Image (cartoon, rainbow, N blue to C red; front, side):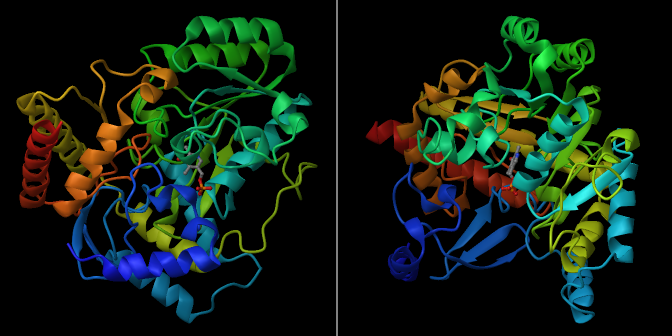
Length: 430
Ligand SMILES: *Cc1c(COP(=O)(O)O)cnc(C)c1O
């Protein structure tokens, strides 16, 4: 596989951009090698600057539920763009998108649009603090809520990939109100709530942990969080930036039947454009300025081009889409697990709804430490063996597989066949 152009571009990128990337996980730091510079995408396929084609299992880290350059999304965004890129005024489109979000996610009565998941999560925390008059946050180890100061503590995703325990630049003051609890540890949650309950503004959670590989909640765990939040008067925040519109049209809260106070959304809601959102009961959301005192804003928030793309994608969300996504995730998870088993490689492939995660461990992970203890060097080898065979996995063992509906049966079979070859190769070169 010729990667000369990507290699040259990466060299040039590193001269002008820190690490050569606009977001750390893209740099292949934990898997090694040259990040592929992508020239274009078509459905399930990405084509890099050297002309190599990859079946894409990342889909821009989740937003592209239907794969690349989906025609309805392009048409909606192009026609919005023809009318102007941004006005800094209210527009009809954002009202329609808000209504579409509310229709899909019944716990959301009102919603505010932002430009990124980070902003949405940060704003949800400010709203929870403003509404409760309390400071502390309960957060789970390995959960990722974007890169705002208070939420970067013991975060998953790129923070975990790079092994950064916190980050320089995050003050002790910003971190001291974040209480950390291990995921799926009901006793630790109960103890933290017993100690800090009356100071807790919010319990923040990825309802399905998907930035520390894939770790579903233990049965009853989310319901217990709901009960704790009710008992101590904290706001329960579901960060559904990955799970929203992906596990189900109504997200993880529909999938698991547990309803949060505030829902944070991103990725799928923007169809690949910089758009995210947070929403909840009207009474709570009306605490936001200009209705209430909690300030939150954005020059480009509700951008008409992003809004048009998001609306177009949400309109495509039918039950059949989720059947197809789950079918793809199942085919990949079962096929990968069988490939590892046949090659005698210790691996656990977790599937939860339409998400899947590949982890080189003998047991299904329940906590961040289980994910951290997996064989990440083996993941790097698997990643490259798949890349060489034209399959693009996330360049980190802390991330998940995001299938799209653009993957048809023959493509899924090709990916599984590539996994079989890759697993045999890993075993042979062990
Ligand atoms: C990606 C992600 C975020 C951050 O969203 P950005 O748009 O990257 O700022 C927050 N929470 C979760 C669960 C995410 O996966």
